[in-house]
Length: 448
Image (cartoon, rainbow, N blue to C red; front, side, top):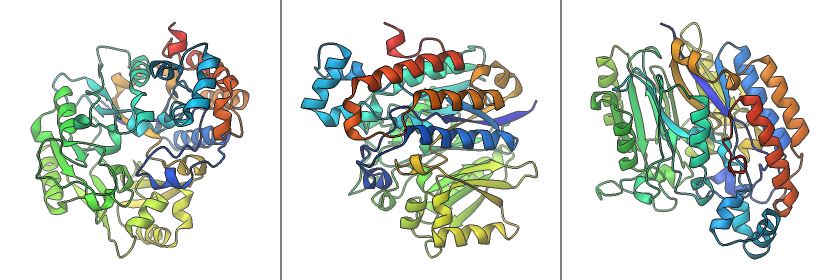
């Protein structure tokens, strides 16, 4: 039976703005207070989805969240009508309104951790929504994320869904941004690679000093248990604390893997040799041949990797078995990064070609191509069981572009978040979107 890696990209929401909310994310903080263009951001993302679908890759779309999140503001003590809640929050606690208006669910790599049926004890595809409890503006996402994923992958014969882990620091979980799967075929058993920044209970693991380590070892282990993974098919590795302190807030900012290849920076992991050996040995047991491509610091510094988002790229398998790397235009603008990529594609290495996309709106908010997508490995039966309305095709692309043009603003500043009309615009847009994507009533305003 054939199997595929399907990329479900997050659709950028109508309140896309540069709030600078993510401490430790250099791009997010450096563009704080700039004026955003939600319409352009959404259309840039849709263009990438359409292009990859046209190249023959399986592609889907994941809906954004309702923002501003009036329910959270009410839980924090703001009262009155929806308009009054927004008005009071803007007047008394603007940072809270900014946080509750974030369109950060566009970073779909943080939506959940996914284990394919070939790896799980019950033979189902398992989803665990990430609690994202390191950042307040993201910690409020997982209830709606779970409902959206449940509407997309609703067939209980094939899909199993788990609630987010306890929302405490000891179980900080950032989803697929710290998870990679290696295999010699998407339908075959593989090795699931969990990267953590710190341990909550074991002091032997060093922690970063400047920026927070968002993913814990204990969260990784809990997800593996929930998904029914065999210890022989799991590898845990610690991220290098020194690179976290340089702005590498997730592993997907410093490494990316696919099939049998790990593409990573020399300084990515705390114990690189041990990590590579374990991946190689465990993948060999299930019939895979692990390969790795290390980018030395002498070729690309950590700073240039973070600035260009070289590793926050999509590593995709071509029909000939070699890889295509999908990168943001910032990689082309960085001399050392572009020189390295040109060198790689000129030889017979694993990366055969590089595709460049203009994702400036999302890049300025701290995420590149890999942040925008959630990878789900599915066999033919499972793919047929997915809600077909969320799978990309020419008609859906054109419909969503028209939907964006109809509902999105082309300019949004922090002061615009205080406009109650923005909430009405967002709800109107999302109500229509749930019909386009066949999601049902997944948003709070639809469930009253």
